[in-house]
Image 1 (cartoon, one colour):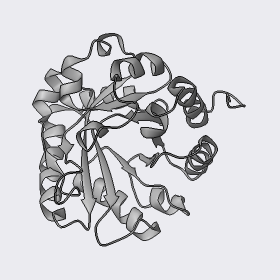
Image 2: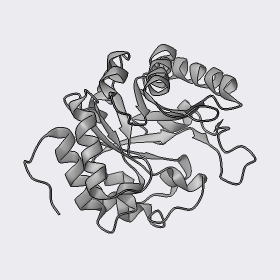
Image 3: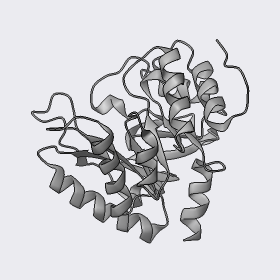
Amino acid sequence: MIGKKRRLGKILKHGRTLIVPMDHGVSKPEEGLEDIDRILEEIDGYVDAVVLHKGVVKYSNALENFSGALIIHLSASTSLSPDPNDKRVVGSVERALALGADAVSVHLNLSSATENRQLEEIGKLADECDAYGIPMLAMVYPRGNVEANINTVKHAARVAYEIGADIVKVPYVENFREVVRNCRIPVVVAGGSKDSEEALYTKIQKAIASGAAGAAVGRNVFGNRDPKRVALNLYSIIHGEIAELIV
């Protein structure tokens, strides 16, 4: 699968990656996403990949010259739905490739009412990704009748590995090394809800020290007044390029 290996190499630099998801606008309007092209231009060169929905990609003027990898998100639900945890597939691998994607991403909510259907759909998409030689990032969260703890997050990462994903994104929990040890694909931690920069950097540092391959940080980057600076600090933590963070 040389095509998949080449595409993965664009996302994972020496086994590490900083991904900035900006797919949140389907769920609900998020402050900071009013002009995604502006964010792309500001963080270019300081992130390894971004996650976007196909419509944003279709109408973007900045992606043509963006140096990072493009991951197109195939899952969606809105906050107005009777069940926001019911993620639906709203795109295809073939269409993502036509739009220039280096990878696709999918979302699975474990313990949700529609977990079985989501699992079935994502399993089929994993096979399609193998057929087309494109990596799949699985965003797997314990959401529904369970909370995120070491056991449920470890299970979430393992599910992604077992169904054929190439990278998995899960919430950070203490004893994260157990999560990594039970998963044979790169594990990245979610940035989570908007937090203080100090708390964010501490979490990512602990995750990297525990064996995580990187982080997928959205709101804490695009929602910051200076997304370039936050992205640079995160990139430095993950790739170990500078000794001091920029305040």
